[in-house]
Structure formats: structure tokens, C-alpha cells
Image 1 (cartoon, one colour):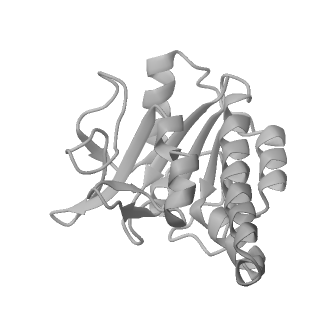
Image 2 (cartoon, one colour):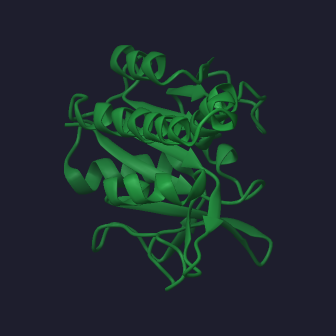
Length: 211
């Protein structure tokens, strides 16, 4: 099975910048926006359609793949299909059901990939009614249907502390951050290539990169 890593953080906290040191990385760029670094070996394709994203994951030659700004898969679908919300109340539930199903299908497609595949899902963060920092979705209905962080054994939070960009690897009691025992220090540099190597070492996965 493939492995998924969820990375959350506010805008400007270094999620996209963490890709800068990769030698070979495939990126699904949901918004199609420029990256905040120069690296010609990072190959990106712009796509926000859930089914086409799944096909990209299945066909990617690189062993490490990023879905950048994955939360906008949800937002884009909502904006394109929100018209029924003004029709009758029943249509509202259809839209949210589809939102949850689309994201669920993407997460499950990661699990179905070959073992050497690591997929990093980048999302913005939000604060729940209970005060927990979590992935940003749309509305309570979606959160109730699919607890996104529950599908991942590794959830990193991108932060800026004392002028330094870092990943927090375990919860501070506020965020849903988590990682297996002994995999990481409490905080690490926001270097996704280091994260990739560490995860592969921990699970004994193939270190070779497909060109």
C-alpha cells in the first residue's frame, strides 16, 4: 500500500517551499500557482478534478508525489456546484455528500498505490469550535462525514518560530499533528526531502527515485 502524509499550515508558513530540495518530485498543483522557489526537477501539473487527480497518482513515475493546496479540491467543487443550494434544501446535502466522497476517494487511492509511493497532501489549517487546529474544509457536515486527519498516520504542521520555518511533528495539545513514535524530533526543518527520507527509513521503503 502507498503512504500518505498530511501537511497543514496557514498561508505563508512554508508548505510549498518545503519541496525546494527534492531531486525528483511529482506535484499536482491544484491552483496552478507559481512555486516560491526555483527547482527544475520538480515536475508539476495543474489539476483540481478528483478523478483526474487519482489517475495522475496512479500513473506518476516519481515515488514521491505532492498534492499542493489540496483543500481547494473541496473549495473548487463547492463553487462550481453551489447553485443547488439556492434551489431546495435537499440539494445542499447532495453537494456536501459529493465533496466528502471525492476527498475520500483520493485518500483511498493513495492507500491503493504501490508500497514505495509517498503522497504528501498539503492543506490550509482552520480552528474547530473546540479550539483544535485542523485541516480546513467547508462546514460541519463535511467534518462529520470525513475526519481528514484520521486517514493519516503522519500529520505535520508548518509553522514559523523565532524567524525559522519548521514542521511540528507531534501535537502541542492544540493541533491534530502526529507521527509514529521515534520517527521525528518534536520539530524539524521544513524540508520535505528530509521528511521523505526519514519516513522511508522508518518503514523500510524503497529509497530509489524513478526518473
